[in-house]
Amino acid sequence: MNKILKIEGMSCENCAAAVEKALLSLPGVAEVKVDLAAGNAAVMLQDLVGDKALMLVVEEAGFEVVGVE
Image (cartoon, rainbow, N blue to C red; front, side, top):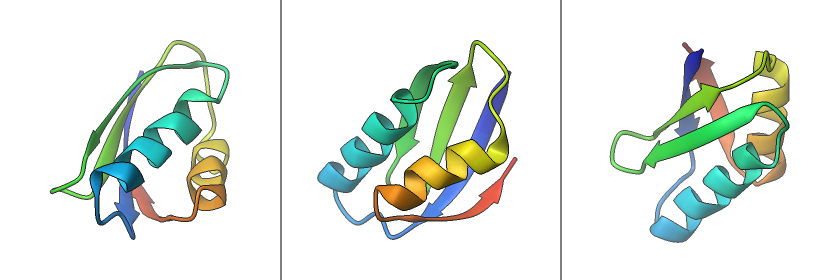
């Protein structure tokens, strides 16, 4: 299962790396590809992970999730 998170507040590669690290810390997340220019993160899941859990770790890293697809 794949999800796309629309994220605001990322302005540099360090921001993208922080988002990637935060998402990968969740059990069930297999891979993360952050697109800084598009302001989103593609999350590949190996187990069921709720949208709230994904949003929470990104927000704890200091960024705002404005949508999940």
